Length: 103
Image (cartoon, rainbow, N blue to C red; front, side, top):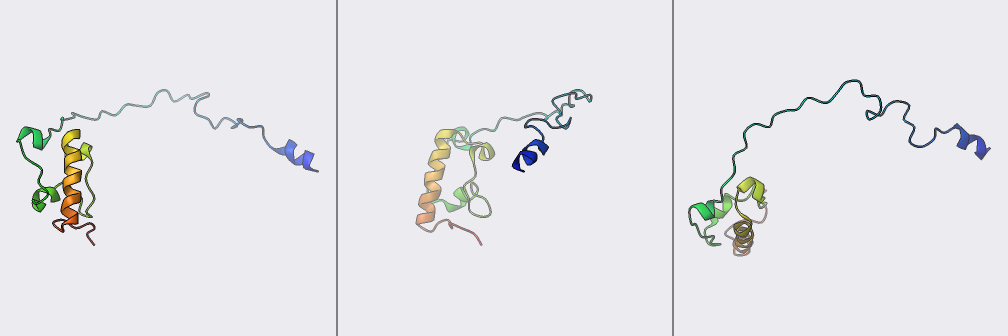
């Protein structure tokens, strides 16, 4: 009886024409332009700012409304200053200049 069940199944890899890779008559998908990309400049490099854990208002701009540290691709800071920024935010949290979590 198990032989009949195994024979009733479709062989693996057979999608009965559902695959778009085989026989796609629609042609290539239209490309969407992403527009002009402006390179973000590190504020700390450009304005010669120092990252100080005692300046909670400055560090608050680099956290989300929930208290998470924003990534480099959003802040635009360079790798060197992003690492220093993360350390500064963590020190400010430990000394209660910044909250760990905002409710």
